[in-house]
Length: 328
Image (cartoon, rainbow, N blue to C red; front, side):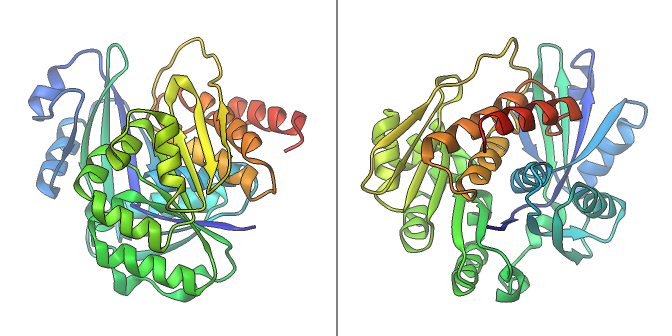
């Protein structure tokens, strides 16, 4: 089965700071995500010219598709970027990784997330959605989904209901299975009623972390959460951080998987994205839910041990070796 994803096309720019002075100078609230406009983004760019930085492609779905490409799955990606250097970087990186991207080019700046890591591993974000914000229903066609079997959707897109409705309708017309990552506690809280409609009418698979699941179901109990969500779709998956994960098919039993031990959790930013990649890789390879949870856990465990959303070759070697040993 072939997988394609759709979401915000972003470039992550990662900075390691020795102290917090720069955050005050560029007016970012420490340990928070702040949405910024183009002029603010240019100010940050100007004031960080002499700061060591690392640039990677980002966005939740972009991370998941890149991870699937590393697992040799030849995934696709749909998003909107600008006609600028960051847009070229985003397109070239996906192509180099093995993701077949269908990118709409707009006149806006490509979306960027400035990520500042301060002592102790704390992260502060200045995020400009840029071109990603302007992805709209008119950009979506049934043709985009031909040749694919499963579409993985970013929950952030629910903020444009016409867009996400068009995505779901046209993907269903093309015969795809639809998978949704709820993406954000805040987004779920603000759009709970609409998410119920979306999942009930279109979605086959739902991924949520415990905060998102709590916002959606109103329950603090993970088993009640996964039952509630599974009642609305075919398959529900709830990620519980250090407490592992649970999954349930509609009308079936609940499967649980423990987290794997790590010496140090460095950064949890992309852990959920990598979990989804591992889970979908196993699921679309025909494996049972317990095995799917295990593979998702393997990828997420590697993701939390590095800063940012890029794993080194040594990590991918470990992942592939472990998956091979388990015959996945």
